[in-house]
Image 1 (tube, helix red, strand yellow):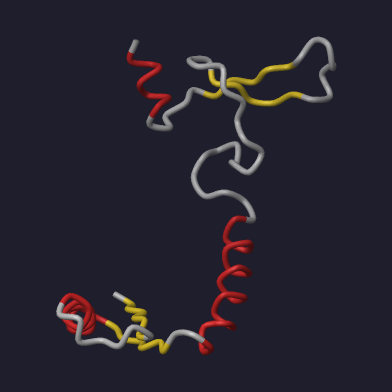
Image 2: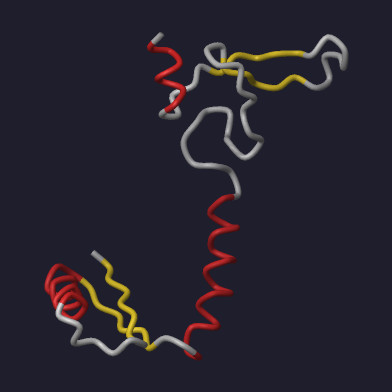
Length: 104
C-alpha cells in the first residue's frame, strides 16, 4: 500500500528488466512497485541527470540574450538585496519591466 504512495512522490524502487521478446541487448530499469519505466534522462545512480545542466545552461543563455529587449534586469547579492527586491515588488514600486536576479 505505502509502496504506491512512495511512487506518487517519486520514490521508485528501480530493478533491472529485460524484455524477453527483444532480448538481452535492451535492458532497462522498471519500478518494482508500480511498473513504471525509468526515463532515459535519469542517471542510474539517482541524483542529478546527466546532461541536464548543459541543456539548462544552453536554454538560459538563449533566454538571457533576449532579455534586454523586454526586461530591465537588476542584479544583487545577499539578504539585503533580496529584501529590497521583495519590497519593490510587493509595494509595486518597481516598473513592470524590472526583473531581479539575487545571488544568496
